[in-house]
Amino acid sequence: LRDFLLVYNRMTELCFRHCVCNLNYRLLTGREESCLDSCAARLVRANHRLMGAYVGLMPALLQRRAAEHGVPAEPSGLPASPEPAPGPAES
Image 1: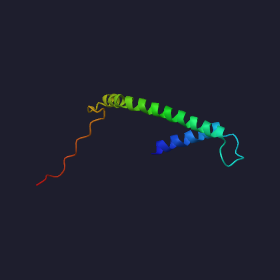
Image 2 (image 1 turned 180 degrees about the vertical axis):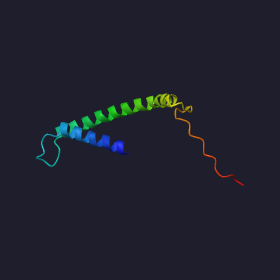
Image 3 (image 1 turned 90 degrees about the vertical axis):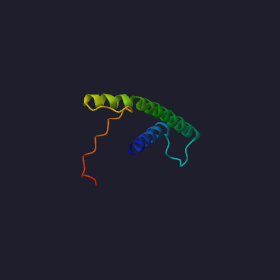
Image 4 (image 1 turned 135 degrees about the horizontal axis):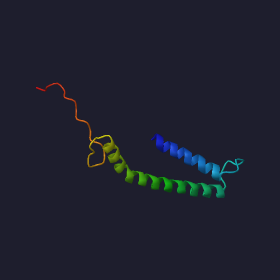
């Protein structure tokens, strides 16, 4: 959630600085509004492409990290969970 909010805040600031040049009016002009729409759409598309690439690469990165640390990886690409510690004998 924190990362999402950081991306959203950066996108808002970037598009606002790029598109809004006159703060003398309460409402946006038509030109400012269309600029903001296209700026936000462009950044959202770029973010979706980056996240798609991240999701595609993550299993391979996790397997490589597991191999470097000598931990066998499960088929899902995530490191195997440690065995539970032996507890008191159950009756």
